[in-house]
Length: 188
Image (cartoon, helix red, strand yellow):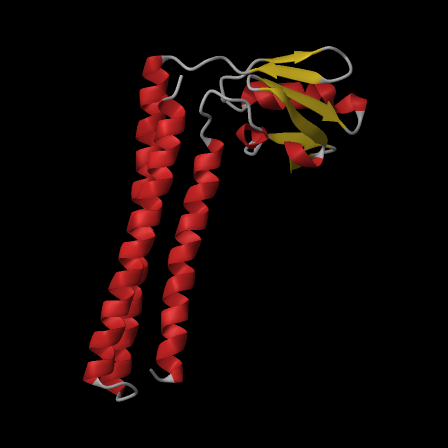
């Protein structure tokens, strides 16, 4: 396999891998009834006029499977953090004791679990679409290389088969990630 073709194959793998990484980040945000600091990743706090991620203005810990504890670096940020959590539409109710904020994560109802599973499946499908789009773009680029005479028809066929194998491999990784998250959500 020539050097340029090798670069295209590495690019294909990189693109598909980034789709899996994105999927994993999105799945971390979906709560499965257990407290996790990732649940608050989307919360932005007004920090002296700037929208700042909560993790940059406070320490976030889990004391047990159902409790998050948020300790701001500056005590005057307690009210702003509490307001940001309430306004985040995460369905969490913060409790401010003047020193830190506690959040008790309520157990999920069966209906909510099913809704979260739908969301997880949607994220998995988005990742697979991204992987297939990467395959399509790489195959288009490979056909241009063949048309330009950079690679032979045989090299094109081999490369397309390798791209298909990569697509299959990364699609299976996406399905596995969805399956694991689904099991985590449905476990009471």
